[in-house]
Image 1 (cartoon, helix red, strand yellow):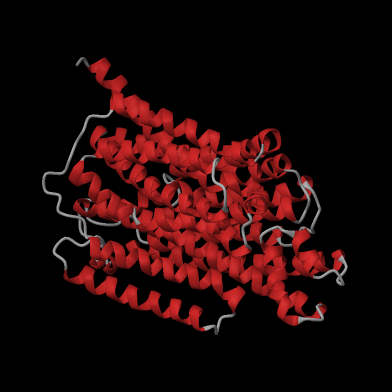
Image 2: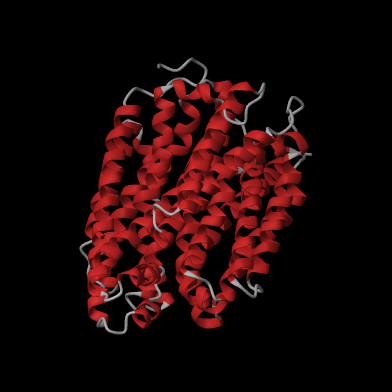
Length: 504
């Protein structure tokens, strides 16, 4: 093969991985503008509607490390093909489901195939490119995520209005089919000859611990936090997490090397990985539900509004990399999170029904702020550990980011429910009914909430929701601001040379 043909093949590999990478945020944020309609069409309860996103994130985040091991052992091309092909098929199946249970089970299966596609795709790029070319390739993958996040709300909004909610998965199917076809013709199969068997005990204990914790958080507002089932789920999650730690300390080739957490900067990067969850990612899910279900926007209007928050990720992450010539990653990440925190607080001051003109500027501030840590954290993930452990560090980083987003979404949904319940419980003659009402408010079902409390005027319910959402944004802004301080303190030392031992 000539050098020109080799270069073209490498570019095709990069295109395949970028298409797969763009499809993941499309599948993550795309359905949010239609979730209220999906729940009504499929007969979903408020809790089951919450699982529509959490099931995807839970499976995705908890299986990234295991999928990476499978790719090394059985072939990166094979696992990438299974991931992208499976993702396309499952996305098509979502358009045909008859009920909410089937929808959520397929969403969880999508998370499994997303983990396979991402882990194998990153490994393929690491084998295909070297030196500066590898860094550029990973930068393109990061930009692809930004494209997916930017395209998802507005494309889904227009498809939903033109063809119904089942059509919104067409873009995901198209991206993944292209990724599968291009990947099959361009990727050269590679394996790790030293790869060992998957750490299945660690994988199962970690996944079940996350599932139990997420279920407890989502079920708490409905059943009550002192309900035996909720307490059992919390206890089970703690026990399974302890089991996971014991397993990882004893196996010869652990799925997660706990000794990496001895490095202060590595811990700082993991905190940075979770930071966008509270000041950005949860809003990608909750805000479209509010804009459509509570504010009364059309799906396309909600998509255009959300574009203000995601569009900066198309450009500014690349600018963040250039700015590291003059400013340290600690300063850029810390300041970016401070700006995002200010935007989240400002969002809480926007009244219900204020429209695009009032909402979009607040979202633009959030998007600008979060773009700087977003553009740096993937590179930091592998630069703060010794060179030979960079692969595992990247896997741990991805797991913390995606699994952290799932837990954050469950926590924030539960917090919004609790805040709304505290606002409306005094207005309802039957206090026991307030939980069902606020669950519907939190999932954008304003008509359903009003039907459960016909004696409460609609403006009163909206006022209660407004106060609850404002209090929620104060909490999110505070968490993001505190994270900014911790990240700055953890990363303030210069990034180490990848071939040397880190400073502890």
